[in-house]
Length: 255
Image (cartoon, rainbow, N blue to C red; front, side, top):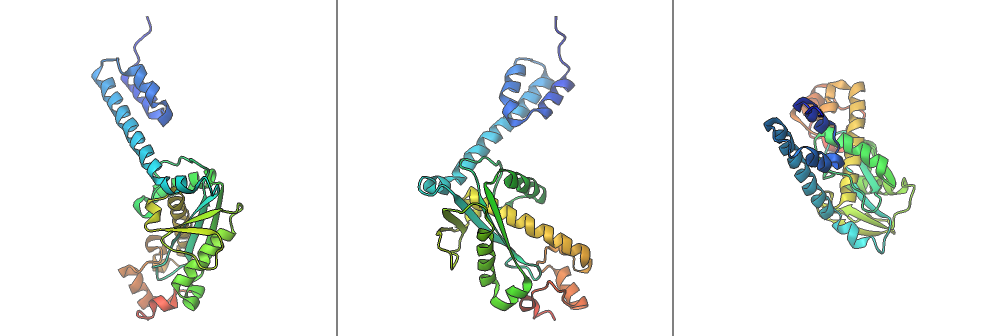
């Protein structure tokens, strides 16, 4: 007679099981009867239910993609990050995902932890049909204003795509000087999987860059504040003066 598996071994199997293995794992051990195993099965069932709900949410995020995919096969989501900081560039990302692409937990980048954004960034870069990134420097922001700089970053991101998009789903804006059909969506980063992906790529790209600046100019705390106007950041500007990556038009009240 086959020896009964120890609960510790079953827990190890559960922890090693990926999402697709959960139904067969539950089926195998649901009749075990031991309280310890029942507890593990309960955890697996909760995890499976969470997965089901996430896939339902993801399907709702594809509402705009489903609406346009028949007439526009290459759908590109566009978003930006970095309009508000006192330092650093504004960054835009353009992302074309495969049809019915499943990237679980994709969302508006502001609703995600840094570690989650990082892992999703890697998955997006691996699965995307094409990704384009546009960065516009503080000097250009000072010259043309932040709105126009944002448009430049978005146009640059589109131009970096290796595959031409048929339609652009934008987070709230209509980009001037772009001939491709555009659909501006208010709070689009939480309503479209393509825009959500773009928001994550833009956020992670810019955050990584600000960490690199922090290694060169640690006195401003760029790794923590990402260039935003925290109390400590403003005090550093007053004490030390501006750095080469500060936006002069944004800090004129502090110097």
